[in-house]
Every structure is written in structure tokens, then in C-alpha cells.
Length: 498
Image 1 (tube, rainbow, N blue to C red):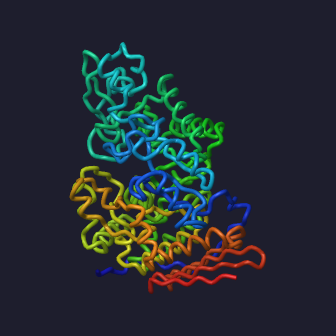
Image 2: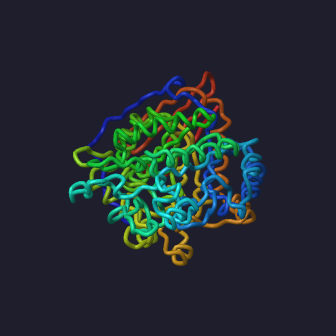
Image 3: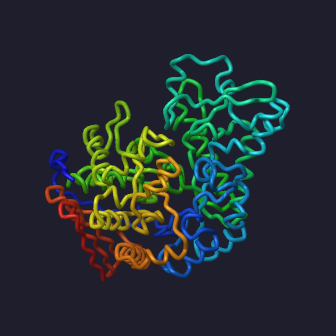
């Protein structure tokens, strides 16, 4: 793999410190994120792995959609019944049992349901006579007087084409709003039926032992004529209201948004936590170009109430560090294009097969690849993981990354779904076998250090030397010190601690 020098204009060394008051602290320092069916096979197996084989490693776990069905058109993100656990994985009793030892996060899929949802099937059958007719969003509900070409072109959608699908509506045919796929039917959150649906989901999660909700696709939930219908002022008001209703039930709120980095900073002021989706591509940029200037800039201005990630169940976000119209990004357009090509090269072309038009679930803002392969080597991957774990926030680790998984080209070929390249299946026995791998064992010990060393309850000082492409992150509380020194030119790191 050949990487050209893509360094930003030279930046002097810098150092900045975050105090314990700024960092805030929280219940969790480390979290696992996993599908129950792909990490063990069931909720009971997932619990056993966390309590036995990974004892003392994770404070919490984000269980990816386990609702009915967990294996729909979008790997559970299209529930037919969002209030029930798919019996093939277990029951709410299993979720509540796991919550005794680990904080449990679950997805609240705000924007849509499956086309097999019983309420929507009733609307298809009975049209306006259905008691659920107001629960689902149609073109005319947003544009009662029609829409101009300009208004339609303004709508933001993460996939090509218009967000509408023809569906039977009793004895008529209606244009139903489908932001993501034709099988995912958007909810009308402005109506009583839509609001009651969301209330029912919140009640089910809270009673099932969930203590944190991840608001999935909430940025698309509010449609406002004449706007992009994505992260508008009306969206922010809706997030405020939904977050408050979750907190009333004792649950904190994490918002999932892929967007310009300034949106993440703004949303962070309104909710308990946001994802730091800019960190992964900036780490990859630093690895492939030896340029840490954009990473350094972000580490200084990023929200501190963040959940940090490398890989996730989705692709590697690109829009999170790019520009947006007149708003410059954290990297230039040329650097962003070079980064995407670097990932394709590092993965020996595997990511190219799973990204964009090559895959069935096309996203305009993500590259589908395991993070190990995106880095190009286990050494570079270990460096990226170390920086993530030392970065302020909750260190959330995706099961495929924890297990050092490579791109699953066989699964991709079988399903034709781009994201499946990074959604492998592991039985409990296979997980235990992978835990003996050196790369995996090193990650486990790193996470155990992050979770247990008292220095991580203190202040954090980050010192960057762009000329040497090196970064130091020091945590200190009294006499307790824990320091990471990372060198992106050499793809190496060292940790020292009291």
C-alpha cells in the first residue's frame, strides 16, 4: 500500500487539559456493543460471556436490536413489534437479569417500523378507516397542497432517490414516506397515534431493565416543508421533548447522528451523550497520512459527553469530518477522498465491494469495512484502539473489533448487504477461542486498565506534536497517573502507569 504525504499545513505543538469538572464522569467507562444473535447466539449466551469470560472488562452493554424480528430487512432496525423481545433470542426477563450486573443500552428506533408492523398492515387493509391511519407518514401529510421540485430536492436522504414508496391504503394507493428502505415505514411523530407509539416503546424499554436509550435515526424523524427535514430547529425541539420523556422513566439518552461535526457539538448540549463519529475517520487519516493536525483540532473542541467508537454496526462515517456547503470540515475534500481510497487499499479492495453502488443498502456517508482491515495492519489497529480508549468519554467497543475480525466477504456475497462485511457471526465457543488471540487479549487488558485505574477519574492532558506525528494523553488524579504515548509515523504506542 502506497500512501502519499497528505499533511495539513504545519501546526505547532499544542497541549490542553480537561478538568474532572469538565469531564463530568459517569456510570460507565467501557461498554460492549453487540448483536445477541452474532455474539454468542442469544441473550443468555451474551450475558454469560460478559459475566464470565469478560468479567471486569465492561461496565455496560449496548444490545443491538433484539425486538421482533431481529433479522428483518435491516438487521433488526425495522421492528414489527418494538415492545417485544424476539423469542428466538430470549425474553425481557433475560434483559432484566443482565441489567443486574451491567448497565443495558437499547435502541429506540424513532423514525420508522417494519412494513410488517400489525398497525401498518391494518392501514393497508382498511385505509382511513383504520384506527392507526394517523400513525404513519404520507406525502400529503407533509405537503397537503403538493410540493415543488425545489422543495422535494431540498429533502435530505442518506440514500439515492426520493423517500417515498407506493403502498395500498385501503381502496387507494398512497405515497408513504420511507426514509431508508421501502420496507421501513416512517412514523408520523406529530400525531397522537405516533406519539403514543413512542410512549409505548419507552415504557417497554424502561420496564425491561434498560437504563440508556439510543435514539436511532432521530435526525430524520420530523418532516418540515421547505426544509431538508434533517436536523432542523424542529428536530432539536423534538429531541429535547423525547429525551425528557426518557429521563422521566429513569433512562439516559444517547443520540445517533451522522452529520457535520458542528451538529454533534450542538446536540451534545441537549442530551446526555452523543457519539464521537469523527474520531474513527480522523484516526484513519492520521494512520494513513501521518497527519495528526485534524485529529488534534478535534480532540480539543469535541464534546466531552461522548461515546467513543472505532467501528460500529454501521459503516465508517465519512460525512462526520467532511464539509457541508459553506461549512468547512475537519479535513479538506481532497484529504477525504484520499482517506476513502486509503481504506480501500488497506483492505485489499474488500471495502470497495461493500460500499456505495456495490452494495444493496447504499449509504452516501459511510465506508463499509472492519476497522482492523481499514487500518491496514494489526499494529496500526492496536494504536487506534489505544487512542480511543484513552480519549475522554465512554469507550464503546464493537464486538467485531474486539474479536479482531476481518472483512466477512463470504457473508457479504451471501446477503449482498454492504454492512454485513462487518457484521460477522460468532458462537459462544468461537468468541472464547478468539479471546485467546494476542490482539484480542491486549484489547481486553487495555479496557480493564481503562475501567479500573483511578487516574481515569481525574484530569486529562493531551499534548500533540504534529511535526513528529506523535500524541500523548495523560490522565492524573493525585499520585495516580496513566499515560499513553502514540506515534502515528511508526504506528506504535506505549503505556505507562502508576
